[in-house]
Amino acid sequence: MTIKNARPWVLAETAYGVVKDTTYDLAVLPMGATEPHNLHLPYGTDWYEGTLIGETLCERTWNLGGKAILLPTMPYGTETNLAEFPLAMNLNPSTLTMVIADLVESVERAGIRKLLILNSHGGNDFKPVLRELANQTEVHLFLCSWYACLSDVYFDIFTHPEDHAGELETSFMLNYFPHLVARQPDGTLAADSGATRPLQFEALRKNWVTITRPWHLLTQNSGSGNPHAATAEKGQKVMEVICQRLVPFMVELCQADIDETFPFQDVDLA
Image (cartoon, one colour):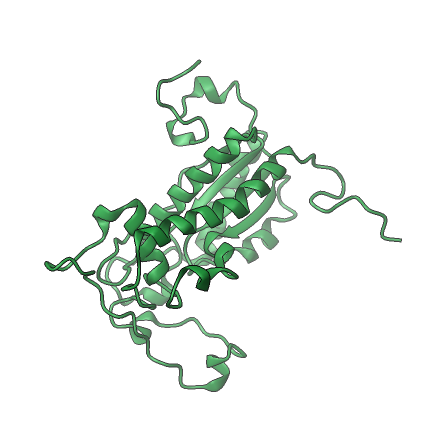
């Protein structure tokens, strides 16, 4: 069965007639959020980013022979630190854990034994989820926050540090969703500077001690990081770096056999 213009790596677009005859190697679950992103980016920024990055990764993996299927993006994430901003749509970490557990069960029933959680929201912390589910499922779980792929090359692309709705995210949206980026009448971004209030204690500033930051105290309009040096070209570079680093991994993961030592190499430790 074939459907014109269908993308068989996108589950939401794929008919059962195709799914029932396809053996998938890997499921990819993007996790987004619905929250303010300074004054200029849409509430669904994390959803748009996670969805497009997931589509691109799965397409390139599929074209190299890896049967990766993209699950629909979760539009909600943990927003407890943005609770003072209207319509920051929160799901507590315990709720998200239960949601992911149920989705993993659905993937397992479909016979898929590898799942990549593609996180697109800094407020989500899914490492505890992997630990909790490790002995509850036959599905091997992998976790990637796509922005972590840029850590060592970030300042080769960007000028200003990124925290939230800054140069990185604005560049991505300018390249792929420019119609959703708000501008002033003179064409400049309808954004503040992304300035943040400094932490009071040295131990917090140096990350010896951590807290969950109340965003209404940290920022003026939820933006942390200067977006005004953003360009569409920088957004294109973001996608290429992510694909260069994750597509080979996904292809290898699709092709890898699950044996007693997976995902480690089978070597003698004696």
